[in-house]
Image (cartoon, rainbow, N blue to C red; front, side, top):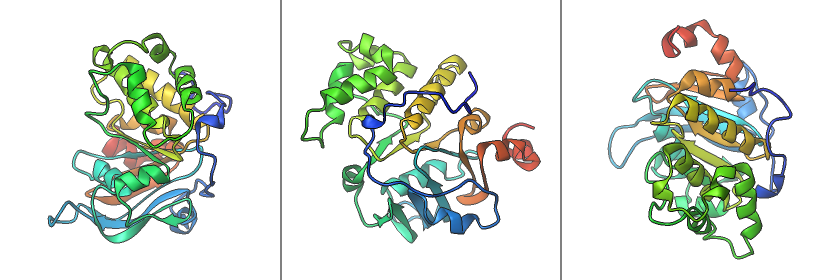
Length: 273
């Protein structure tokens, strides 16, 4: 995969994004981290909660992302990574903490209302309509739109050219990596303010993983902040502006992708040395 830190990567057409709002979070070390993340564009702040009446899975967990950034959540199996993502999206009730988007407290909103507010969420599985064509999947993604969304479809095809080539093909006939592109493209059809990806490279080959990461970088270059859960920790941190290492539902390490890759403890405990 080519250097993900190049400033000139990707599609610069920001019209695919929702233009409202910008955060101000800056990359930094642990000192003063909480005060800086309070102004982030999207923040799940000090989240504690679990599913239903069950025990807490998240414990005072904070996850944030700013405009144009890629923030990656990594950690061992069972660390609460996907739970943290789902908490930000409103799929479980928080017992403590809050979720804010562009300065607005959205903690009490349903996932459907959060989509209307500008959150695009791509789950790990069951994220496309397999019997529909690629283009029909994208059209379904525009369900909250009342304007002409054809230009957005063309922008998705510019980001993911293979989808344009296969626009009339049933999505279920595509490869795993191409299906993930359909899922991301469908989320982009809402013109989201922020894009959330749960394990986007799960089950794909290393070559396809690199391609997907390149496409994710291109999406971020349009200005959309991306919050991503990933099992491929080393590769994900290589493209991350911000990284969160969770252990048992708690923040264990936070920093830029480069900082975490250079941290001896993170490398030894989570990256295989």
